[in-house]
Length: 336
Image 1 (cartoon, rainbow, N blue to C red):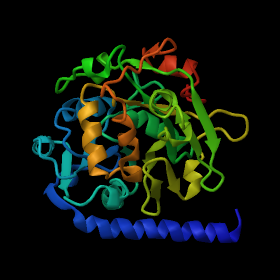
Image 2 (image 1 turned 180 degrees about the vertical axis):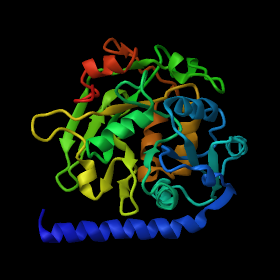
Image 3 (image 1 turned 180 degrees about the horizontal axis):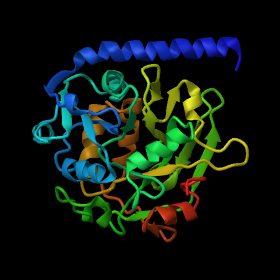
C-alpha cells in the first residue's frame, strides 16, 4: 500500500470516528445496564425501528448462541418495541429521533456505543432480521468461536448474507410475534452469486441471490451487497465504512483465504421475506432513509401486483450450517 493511500485511509477513519462522536449526541439513554458487562462478555449491537414483532425471537436466538449483553438503539419506534426492549434484563437501550440516513444508516450511533462499551470485547453487529450462523453453532457457543479466533490471532470474522424466503407468495408467510421466521421462510438460493475483490479496502464484494434475480434482473450490479463482517474484537481505533460490509483498518477485511487456504466464515440468515415485507418496503421507500434514498425499497414495490413469489426450481430448503458449508457458502476452515 502506497504512503498516500495509507494516509488517505487514516484520514477517512478519523473522519468516521469524529462523526460517531458527534452523532452520539443524538442518543438519549433509556435503560443502562452496562454495569453488568463482564470483561469476557460477547456483546451485540443493533439499531431498530418498529420491530416489536421481531424482537422476542431475535433476543432469544442470540441468548441461545451465548450473547451476554445487548446494546440497542431505538430509532423512534411507535409500536411498543422500545418499551419491550427496555424491560429485558440483558439489554441497555438508547433512543433517537435522528435521521437514519444521516447516521450512515445507524452505524454512527453504534460506533459511538461500541467505542464506549465494546473496547476489548467481541462485538456482533447485526440488524434485527439477521441471524448469525457459524461453524458448530449447533454445539458450541459464540464464546467458543471468539476464543478460537483469538487463539488464531484473528480479529474479525466474515459472513455472507443469505436471503431466506418461503415457497409460495411472500404474503402467505404470516409471521407471529415471537415465532421462528425460518419455519416460514426456509428456502434459499444455493448459487447465483458474484464475487469481486475491492482493491482499496481488500474486502470481497458479493452480490446475487434471490434479490438480484427477482428485483434487479435487468441491472444486477444494483443489487444489495451480501458481504458482511459482523463479528469483531472491537478496538476504539476501528470503524465500519459502509454498514458492516467493510472496516478500517483495512486488514480487518481480510476474512477470506489469501494463499490458497480457506478461512473460517459464516452466514447471516436474512429473514426479510415474510408477510411483513410489503408494508415495510412501502414505508421505507417513502421515508427514503436507506441507501440511495431508499432505491432498494422502491425496487421492491415496483411490481404491479404488490406481492412476490421468490421460490424457483433451483431453490434449496435450509437444513443446517453443514449444508451451507457443503454448498461453499461458508467454511469451518481449520477449526475442528
